[in-house]
Length: 297
Image (cartoon, rainbow, N blue to C red):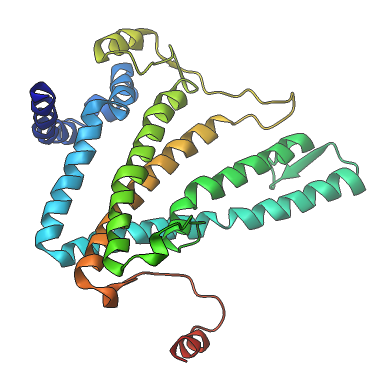
């Protein structure tokens, strides 16, 4: 027990050194023309050291925010702005998916074309089945990059067993506990498993989560890019490595939104019911003034 506590606080203290060293020596992990630098990036992206850098940053921001609530509101607004901006942009993939499906139907059923070309001059030309399977990618864009946007907008289905019956402050306490015990751990686990899963489809020799940094540096001698281009059908979509990148993006955005949700729940609990949805940038359908009048009545 004591050894575990010593290890925990030691890693928190080391996080300041690790972060400072990474910032002052960017070439050691960002110069991907150097195979060892790329392997260091792969290792640290899924390492205990990186986790404690992120966790310590959360603690520092939380301590400052507890002392200065306006700073914490600023963090909440910044993280929610990020989720809204990314989500609103990639939500257009839904329209693109519908339009592309219409083109596929016309090309295949009416004009009986085997391929579809897109662009001018050197056009992008693939088999119809490639464009049809690519629709999965648009769907993945919406699911992964719009999840936190939907969360901010309150669009996810919520199972309510006791939440509606408890007091306002209890609700906010439940939200705080939920963000710490469910959202954050789920995001961390997804990141940990997804990180090496992604890189195993991008480079060889394949890195493993059980490899030490020294072993990965030895592997870097034979390191080369080997991006996955195998599809489920001979002429089908062949960029499935993008799904692995989206999985990591999803995990990172969920973790950031868990931080924003924890801070917002704390601030709304502290400031009372009048602060609920404070600074929340929610989408409004139709005439905003008409909806405001309806809410007043």
